[in-house]
Length: 119
Image (tube, rainbow, N blue to C red; front, side):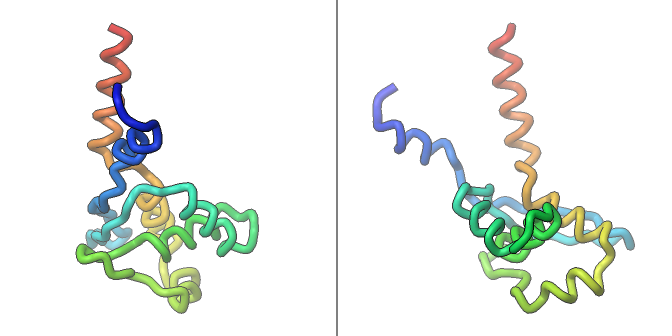
């Protein structure tokens, strides 16, 4: 394969925003968009969490990465208290997990590739 290693890695990253769909506890569907997690975003969320609590880390990721279809942020830092105190924990956990998880299509594609090598 020709090309610089960094260029190959950047091309493979595919940091395009994907739609996330979460069914809330009341049955409503909550849609938002998010890009795959980069190391820089992980480091910033760790700093912003100001603790080793995984929930604080995931909440910071939700605040910074959940966007609408046009890329506008859905939540501001001022929403943190309302998210923690006025939303169901089950719903918040689903949203935070959706930000961290890879899109289903990419996982399936990776699984197919890895299973094909073993054949």
